[in-house]
Length: 589
Image (tube, rainbow, N blue to C red; front, top):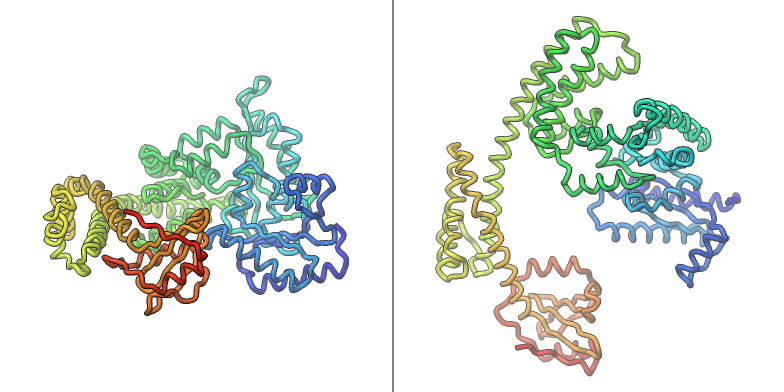
């Protein structure tokens, strides 16, 4: 698309205004190519009302949304509205389209690559590194699959780009999985080496075609090695499945990614123990053969137990490069279970290995190696203690968490019964008097509650055994389920008393009368369309205003429903105004 000087000025003005307002969230802005006649015809077949104006400049705005707590559709509408407003202020011919980064990745997960193809064909006016990574990866993928489609199972973008940590200088990590299951004329290793050389050379070609200078790190896996690494809980494969985005997939990558998301692929206890055991065995090897493989084994002697500790804590194993940072964030800063000096030992190992690997350090002296062996031995001893501390922490937290949950739920149930305040010392008696004695809750749950409270009391004294903890947990799930269902039933009955149901024409609506405000739904077929109004002293409704489901749900959660709801005469005028003169009030028995 030819962009004249005036249009270029408009695009720059749009960019400056958008970055001034949302700079920290904007990953990239690009000018898209115009639609071809065939694309216009396809759009018109999908949407007969579609009209294409060749004078308008199509822009793409990619937004970072990983840090936002807002719903994706709400966030997308917000940025689209902001883009439209800024574009309108700059010039009517600008036509921006906002995309959330998660939306870009999700389209790839679903096998829809139109967005990445658009990015690859666009001209960037602002980029923090992600758009360039997508462009060169898409071009490289096309070169590779065109030549070797028979052998390519998956082409995956990974690393800092997909983790939301990209910068304009970030390396671009891509993975290519090669099918070796039907190779007869050469060995699997020979197939991998031959294809790898050509695939890497195509990476250089993609860099020349796009003008993107960032280093393209290309990792090639044959399918059998990929499967073996997955069975062994290799942290690198876990990271690839968790963070990778497929740009091409023949049904290998996405099924495994979905299984990982669903929690079906988990490091087994045997895998965790294996990572731990490798530390000491590698230290022994270092003592014997440090001149040959010393530094490599020393590096993994602290890395794999560290990843095992993270797995025991409940965190999927990070990449080797990220492990020190994750260890520090969790065990030093957050949990305060580990002293910072141990992270320094881990970081020193990573740094030494990197300098040796890159050639900036040619060798390591015996003195340095002896010192590293000593540090790593002490590190391994400390990590073994950390394992015990993690297990003890989870045991402590399990009983405290169980106790807190049960107490909170019982307090909520008692509030529904009119008991607003209850001290911990009174809890069992109130539970028995208000719920057990009145047959609202089965008597067996009193024994469960007594066991939980006694377990918490004994655990605080440091006298509780694991057997006692399991005994306390045994009936707790049934108790929680029963009490939650009890609250839901009771609040449902109370809510029904606060509703006025109305039939108007073929539609049904309702007014929910809470303490000081009312919520109006004109059409129950469209429950997302809600209004609210104050309840006046004379019983009428004040001025209505639009609201949303979230506000309605919060109001319901906080509401204290009266035992009876009285409808005063003025509200009938409101019903006529809202639902029409022929509205009918439904009365149920």
